[in-house]
Length: 117
Image (cartoon, rainbow, N blue to C red; front, side, top):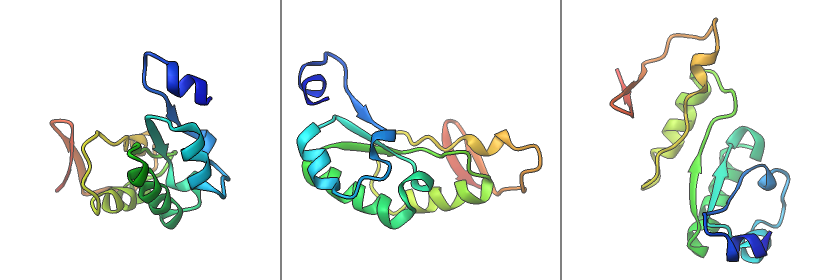
């Protein structure tokens, strides 16, 4: 994987490779991906996600958060979590619309941005 991250003409992102990793710093230092994709539900929650973000930012690795089949309640929590950071990339928070019996949410997508209504 390190060879890919060093030589690939396109940016490499780690995603599921992050699940269950205890030594986050070693993984990111050794592989040096250009991006990491964070799914809080699969990483152990917001505390684990915050650790990934801190390490990635220390190493100059870009990150973004995406949902993993959360309902509108989960998406709202993720959006509030992301709101604590200065983000420059779009975040992937769109799975709530998959549910037919989803709860009504005050969050709306307006012009590609998540807005509270």
